[in-house]
Length: 405
Image 1: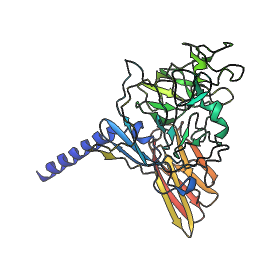
Image 2 (image 1 turned 120 degrees about the vertical axis):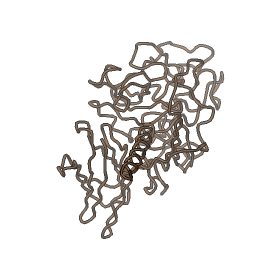
Image 3 (image 1 turned 180 degrees about the horizontal axis):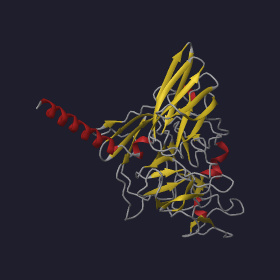
Image 4 (image 1 turned 30 degrees about the horizontal axis):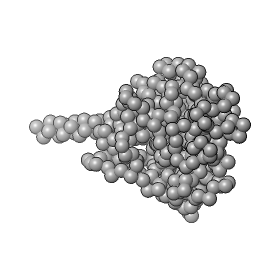
């Protein structure tokens, strides 16, 4: 009798664990968590905390990336920790009413907790000159008017210190890899994922990959209507309103997304895609279109989570100190769909070797000479689903992490 009671108790615990595990999806595991590694200014970088309930994910972040950022020519602002908590719905829904405009400020987060901004720079044409704030028409293109202040990662700080990207976050993923489906690199505030620049050629069939093309076409008009800024002084493209959505001109809809299958959502989802041209330069509308596809809450930042919530604690935050040698890193995402991204801390020793082993001890692949302050991609696209070990070695300093595919 005691054995039967023990069996059913264990079975109940197992069911509970399965139920909890079933709640953990890409909207939770995508975030690159870190509580020890520092980025710009010595501030804690990436995402510090992820909580989730049945309906929402809460992401706590400083908006400081782990990779090196700056300088910002002509921009007097400097990044500072934002210490915000953002809310994302776990069951996003299409907005079937009037679409919600993507306003100024944060409209979502990249997977490393950095803010996503819309395509505008916050000025509009008032009839005779540029005026601060968004207008009904002729809003300035941030890439044109602020691009000179972007750093090599195509980001810069806002007046309040919020480091952000209006366009493709080129240091977050490999935007030159046109042979694989891009990873999820963020989420919009309507809860739908944002992918890098490459998706499946056929929206509902995994297979060949192509660069996703925007369906916005630059106007060829010789003048702007309604007293807009003169084209002779401000050429077409200086205003986001110069781009006209043309159905079928590209792969994406008016929101800069589409309904499709992805490695993380094999059953299909709506997804946004970062858009770049064939020279890997940002292409309007860059991330999200002028409006969200989904329903957006009235407040998305500076949220106080309403419990009960579960804290997601990935196993892939590592540090090992041996003989005055330091190996510090972040691995994300984990579980892995195709690529695991390894971020090496600035305080690391040089020339670390990372070797991936299966559970039988066979070495599958290795990355040599990992250096401080650099991100690396571990290709696991051709590796079967299962559990693996990633071993970091530098002299007598050794640390091993579990990775789930």
